[in-house]
Length: 172
Image (cartoon, rainbow, N blue to C red; front, side):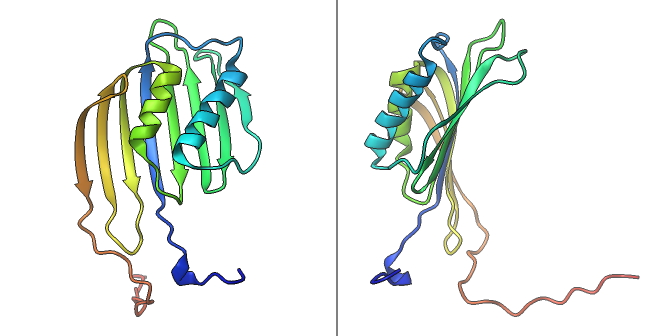
């Protein structure tokens, strides 16, 4: 890229995995418009941009009716899977992957405003290759965080300089 050097680019690679039970089922009548509104608010809050059109799909297995959509973003994607299993609270599974920093608290706040969480659990991963990975195990109710456990892996970071390859001999 003209005028940009490798040292100018910093990629954070962060992932939020959010699973929530909802207080009430989402409306099936305006679900695509509601999904567009949600994504618009979320991207505006996070300072991210769409890369292409949203892909929207109905569940194939009607034992757990619902729908899914994927929104490509310039820094990767957001996937949402909504299900209504008979006799249980409706639930949503959301994956936000970005090579730009993800404000997970903002994702929880915006998503709760659109979907009304009962209780939820999330895993937030800072996916470093040249630094230790940081993992947060988070629980909450509504937009409120009730607990955060922080895990940092203790394995050494990978080096940008190639190491001498190990030679492994297979036994015959």
